[in-house]
Amino acid sequence: MRNFLADKVVEIAPSGIRKFFDIVSEMPDAISLGVGEPDFDTPWHIREEGIYTLERGRTFYTSNAGLKELREEIVNYLKRRIDVSYDPMKEVVVTVGGSEGIDMAFRAVLNPGDEVLIPQPCYVSYEPCAVLADGVPVIINLKEENEFRLTKEELLEAITEKTKILVLPFPNNPTGAIMERKDLEDIAEVVIEKDILVLTDEIYSELSYKGDHVSIASLPGMRERTILINGFSKAYAMTGWRLGYACGPEPIIEQMTKIHQYAIMCAPTNSQFAAVDALKNGDGDVAMMRESYDQRRRFVIHALQEMGLKCFEPFGAFYVFPSIQEFGISSDEFATRFLKEEKVAVVPGTAFGACGEGFLRLSYAYSLEDLKEAFGRLAHFVDRLRKEKEGR
Image (tube, rainbow, N blue to C red):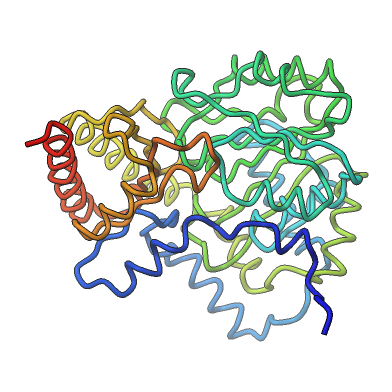
């Protein structure tokens, strides 16, 4: 038989994260710091609403764009949190997680050959989604000395006449970096001048530890050229509910909804009802979880300082991104040896782009007890590597 596979799919590399999880799942007493998932249960009142929905038999399709009540609550939430107003009937679509929103956004706006600017290190899906939509990914390598923020100069250098859209992945996975208002104002100035779109992925917007999160959509002239992606996985500990949303200009959301209509039909109905309750009654839960993550963040930063591992202080998400360049080994080798010798799984920085070489992603979305044990093992491993390097 002839080869029936699509070349562009075959050529996409699998996620660089998975192999460590496959190993750790079969390793007794191993600790994983690799999963980007809250360790909290979904708050009970949200689960209860989901259960109640099932008991009432509300298992029918919703409209393609999502429950009207949910879209209205999303609009209320965004007005409350980032001071941006959307029309719930024309400028919001409920998606199967934020990842579907990213995929649909690229497919709705990209023509073959259009360039997508992707600052890395970043979430693993942007580049393959751009390729699958026949776009051309253009990587902007972020720098540790800038705390992995995107600068105006870096953006200007990457823009060409083929540039269509900039991905803005902040607060950032894997680095924990944030963009503050002045940073975003500089980026917005370039975006408007060069007449390009922005896809802002704000899934970690509630996990910001240096004042309230600022959305680029809230800046003058940016709402009409921004596609905002968010969801319920991180803030509300609802990863398995698979629910997100996209907001933006009506012409773009209309086309995204069309793609969603043919590919998905609608997001899970009981998840949508539960999400209404999350938005109405979940602010206290979000604040509690954010405070807990911040406590863990401070512990992790202190532990890294104590063992002498260089790491800038992250103020977003629930990751740290320490440098291991002093040891003269690759990120993959460090992670592999650490897992085999100390039974702790972390993710090599290269899983998030080539410029992640020399770094590791460690998640602190785990209990303090597990973090203390894991970072104790990391301290032992780092000490052993330093002695090896010294030839002792």
